Every structure is written in structure tokens, then in C-alpha cells.
Image (tube, rainbow, N blue to C red; front, side):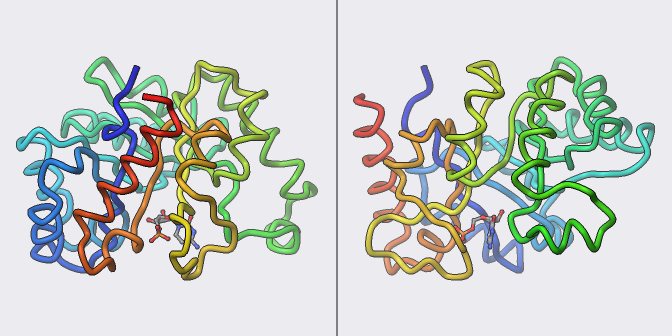
Length: 233
Ligand code: C5P
């Protein structure tokens, strides 16, 4: 059973390694898991991921890979060698198969993104899909399950619907988390940490409510306490 602290992933959505280092230092032992996305990854974030891993932290590389199978496989092998714990890919069957085969035995887990949360039915139609979001999300979740993907990166709202499809064997990692009373920013659908855990989320990804808090460490500690309470631990 994972401890509450290990279920909180702080999104390092900051522009520079210096800003990321400052935040990691401020959060100290309160946070063990960090997500690095495009913004930081392409600004020195990959060597910084190496530093974090060397310091005993877990790293989620949110790179949402999608390319030909061979290219995805080679990329996944490099990420596995880096020692990252989670890597996102887009939930296309060829991409998922390549990533699952290439992830190896170093502890890397592959998370699939079914449909980006910014997409609605009109965006899918404009992309040439004959599916609504409500149809495509469960379809891709079932494909991910059948291919052996380790988890899904999905909204907490989707988590409740996807858990029955993927069963207990897949992890659900959810952004869009807002403690009660905290601004939603550009998140369209938000849930409190407690409700996200109740909806079946295994890990919660939190950015601005911690990064922009007057006291980030206290904000993170409060979320860990809420997760612990929701788990009954
Ligand atoms: O909103 P917050 O700052 O907590 O964002 C944490 C993560 O949520 C981001 O790193 C991104 O992966 C995801 N996100 C999202 N939809 C948005 C904004 C962010 O899924 N509209």
C-alpha cells in the first residue's frame, strides 16, 4: 500500500531549472514525486530529472510521446535508462504497444492519455474522428488495458468512469486537483484531493495550488493530510 505522501505528484510547471530547484528545496521531504512537462523538459529539465532521481525523488516525465513504433520504443528505452518512474504517451495502439514492449525492467511505468482534456467533440471531428469524446475515451482505455499499459493520465471525473473498465490492475493518475477554496485557474473540471481519491485516483498531480501558494510546503502538507484522511490511513 502506497503512503499518502507518495501519491502526491507536484507538477514543476516552471520556466527554468533554477525555479524548479528553488521549489524542490522549499518542498523538502514533504514531496517525493515530481512531474516534468514540455516547458521544463525543453529548458534543461531532463538533466534536472537525473539530479532529482539521484536525490531519491520519483520523476514523472509528461512528454506525451506519439510517433512511429520504432521511434517511440527508442525514446522509451532512453527514458527508462534515465530512471524515470512514469512517462506519458498518447493512447494510439501502435504507440502503446511499442512503449509497453520497450519499457524494460528498470521500473518505468507507461501512462496513456486517452483524449486530451482540452478536446471536445468538435475538435475530434475536425481531426477526422467519427467518435465523440464520451465514446473515444472508454474505447482507448480498453485498448490500453488490453495492450498492458500500466496506467492512464486522466481527469478525476473520468477516473470514476474508467475504473470499471480498467479494473484494479491499472493506475489512474489525475490532474485538475483543487483543495476546497482554491481557484480553478484554467482547469475546467476540478475535484478536491479527497474526492479524487474516492473516485478511484491512485496519484494526484497538483501544480499551481502548490507552486503559487504563499507557503508551498504547507500547501503540499495539507494535500498529503487530505489524501491520508481519504485513504483512512
Ligand atoms: O492546474 P495545475 O497547475 O494543478 O496543473 C497540473 C497539471 O494538470 C499540469 O501539469 C497539466 O498536466 C494538467 N492540466 C490539465 N488541464 C489544464 C491545465 C493543466 O490537465 N487545463
